[in-house]
Image (tube, rainbow, N blue to C red; front, side, top):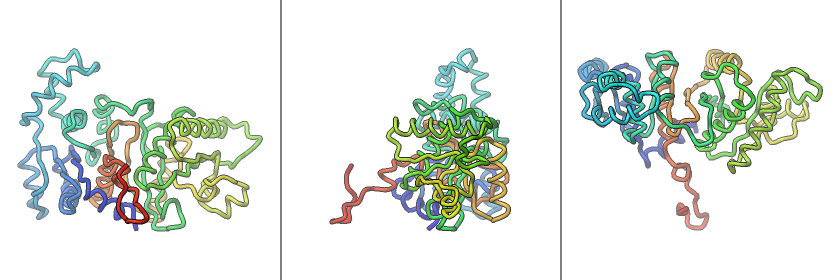
Length: 354
């Protein structure tokens, strides 16, 4: 069963509100319609109401179960103005200047998230990554103890021998060009936490490099991955995260059991990794695009990590199907893992109240 097929019925039992700043985009509308039809929650489309309705009519899409907000005409903007001015970055702005910000759909969406008006957000269908992410970086709080905002892409390979029933979590493929060892450790921890939340399987995290367990390497990039591995394992222990980290590993030693055995990788990560952490953005982005184009593997994301609430920033080339899958994933992040995967009493078959 694919990740989306697995999460959808669980999300339907705990539906969430997802705000979509690019509400008039045809792909966003198609994904929102599917999300609402499956009763996974309420899509909140931001944009010009008449334009959204015209696009929906042209696509023969119903809008029942979907909320539409025009930020410039919304009553909520009056409530947002003083809250926005209360943010240190914007404290010196006059009301008119604040309203100019809040009439931008992404800033309005970030304020909806910050004030509890939405449970998750998805942006990027028509905007560059930097402009889509910036309002969330400026407004949303971070997870306590996390300084690094990074991204995850999820590959649904269809090959049950890979990762967790064919699911692989890749990071960072979209945000930090040259991460330090401390940032790599944060990326690994954040990715592992989300992987566990979405699959309920202990993460097996491979810290990737061009070598495997080299005892003599003096290359700073290799040594950075070794140091990041130790840091991530220490942080996981501190946070009581049930995850295993190993590195440095080549990708074949991380994913293929026979190669792992040949290269004497003795940890549970060897040949069985379900989380792959790349040494830099070049490696991560190239590997992701190669997997998508050469193998046709379905990809979802990018899911942004480090924020206190779930945010996704999709590629401008995403299809409606890709967007729907990412919608399911980002909304499922807002559901407590104990609700997504309740503990079942083996005698009664009923969920155990934790």
